[in-house]
Image (cartoon, rainbow, N blue to C red; front, side, top):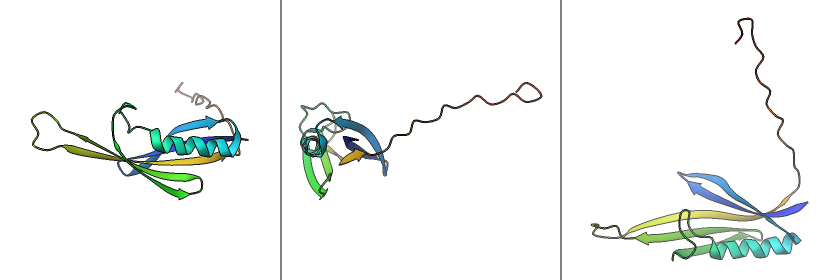
Length: 113
């Protein structure tokens, strides 16, 4: 079928899928795109040009764990605050698609509800 790069982010201890990036060109192109995303994806809410620390771990031939670290110094604070975010970047082949069945309105009861 088709290849994707999936981006998962942890928030409050739970992982969620935040991006599904379709890639044309097959598995090799998807792997190259996934690796590029590990090097370039900014932390959530940051501009791509904002500097951040980055650790990239290859956890399998098709996935990476990325740790992003930012530091900011708020006005009036005595020391900077450091924020850390974790991303899972995975390359995956879409193998099945099933559209959701549209919901039907509830039937009206005896009393018109």
